[in-house]
Length: 411
Image (cartoon, rainbow, N blue to C red; front, top):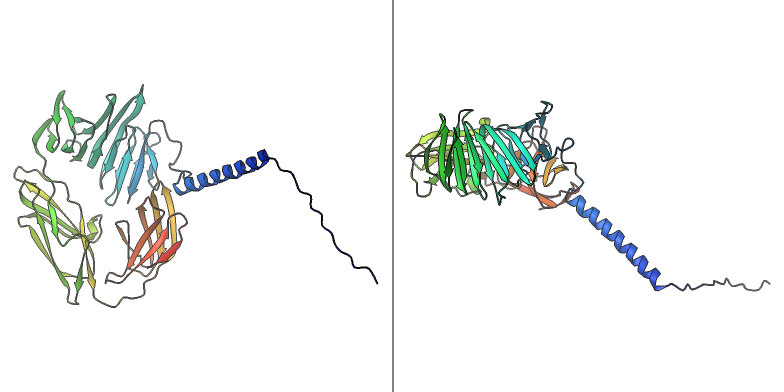
């Protein structure tokens, strides 16, 4: 009989120096920092390609956009459709369509907002010996300009008709072109120096002026847009089944009564021509009744005309929703995808029932006949709430990850 054998294990204990332990800890810490940095950079789109080629020196940048925005490159005469953050060089033309808007960051830190149906040419964007030169021409539509602090060596000039307008620091102003002959200037904050035929005029805060015929005229106090009152913004009105009547009411601009008003009501926030239900100018009253409204979301805005003939900008659009008091139906959405366009801009898409209303971050769209939908949004968060509704009061909210494009949860 074999004797019982035992397996023996021998362990040699290592003597590890303190320096070795500290070195291993340093390597682990360094790797953690690298991994954390890569994660944070990915989260904030540091590695996202943000232009359509090599960015020229001192170029401006489109930092936000929606709808159809096009750039015609001066260097190649090529026209491109903006689908991500991209540069705008000297000589380039930016053109927005009826649903298009673009926000341009200039090299001096100023922000130019190009409104729908507008054409803007960047004439100059250079930095020389520490000074910065920005020059833009408005050929059509509306351009809003906002500046903060500026150095003495900064020149920010907007051309409108025959005028050159040097925008001062801490200024908010809008330029409305009526073609190549002139237009309107509105200064709500700060100041502008307007030069026509060698004569310079200072336009101060809350000033309105008209450029035309080689001169600056109609200088007066700036009128503010009318103020909507009812229905309250985002109010829901319940339809009992016989249609709804909504009474729209508003007030005159502050301290400046109007002689008439211009009202638009539309089915989409962009007020596209084929979505406008009411387009009434010359209204003397301060209310308007809409009858027979079916379930859905409605948007409305106003302009006012003063006694001098000055016309205000559009008021901020308000919306109200007509809903039918019915039992909620099961609303679902699948196939979620998120495409980052650079910075905080994303395109969200998915699939639901045809005709459903999709809302996120103040934007609305509708599912097509095949149930597909696509929406461009801007958000600094890592996740977003997307509401899908049937226009009759039934809705579901889907929380989507902007990093992975996956559905996190629904409520």
